Image (cartoon, rainbow, N blue to C red; front, side):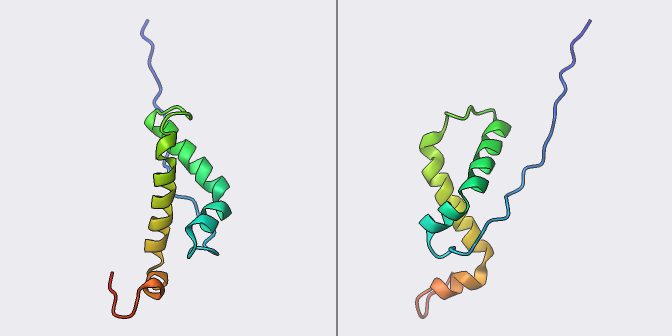
Amino acid sequence: MSIALQIESVLLTRPNFDDTNLGNEGLWTLDNAAALARYWQQLGRALGIDDHEGEEDLKLWLSEQHRQQMREHVGFMYELLPHGGSL
């Protein structure tokens, strides 16, 4: 008798974030702490990483999530550029 393992696939998508404080990374992270924590855990589980593994990468990952969100708001990025600056 063979044992078949059922492989379950789940589509992971970035959460919808609260961008009220998008101009301040620290406040933005606090505003979105619950969604970011769920997303971090989902990604770790999808990669087979235990919850305690990779914690040293959390700060970099949080910063990257903020940068990605800012890139999605191109108009916001132009407001942050100095006069004559470019993307």
